[in-house]
Length: 115
Length: 113
Image (cartoon, rainbow over all chains, first blue to last red; front, side, top):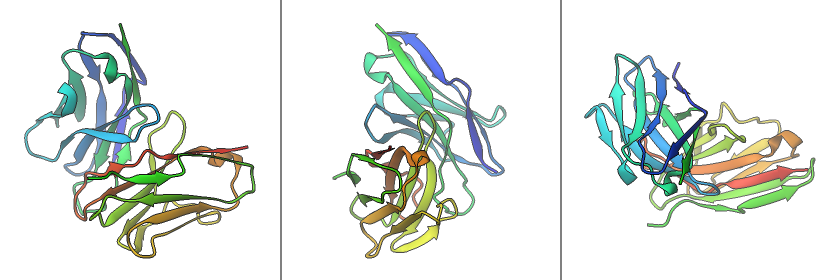
């Protein structure tokens, strides 16, 4: 069975400091992995995706994530936080086998950015 | 290109009343999804359509929930009767067939009193 665990429910950083949002996954197959962001009262927006190409994936707004199979991790990072990054972030797994289109979401991490 | 459209954005009803949500996917996206997002949690899939066919409705509580996508374009999700525990955000998403990336609408926030 596929699952994701977001290790922190809440992360607080100061503006201009690095961001690290942690995600571990469980999958019987080589999965596709995503990070989505959700701003208040807005729809979910795709930040980046890993689909078995390069293990270091660059996304929008300066975010990137590294797929580490040995650690079953897909942590999201950004070198310097901006106030506009404050939002809810979801790590998502989709099985590579077949094409069910099923996305399994983590519980989410709330990112707070302090001035 | 226009994004996924959902209406209404907010709905407040009393328990035991019916309610319906509407979704119009991105043009050309044959796959449509309805998700339920409870407060403080990630979205959970309710139903997935490929064109007009519901190909995965295993998580849809069929005693009170129903959905349709008659012409394979827009879709309606209905709850009848609503219960207090149905208060949540209902998200619609769409994708091109065979593509894993899904595009989400803004959601409908339902409050059942």
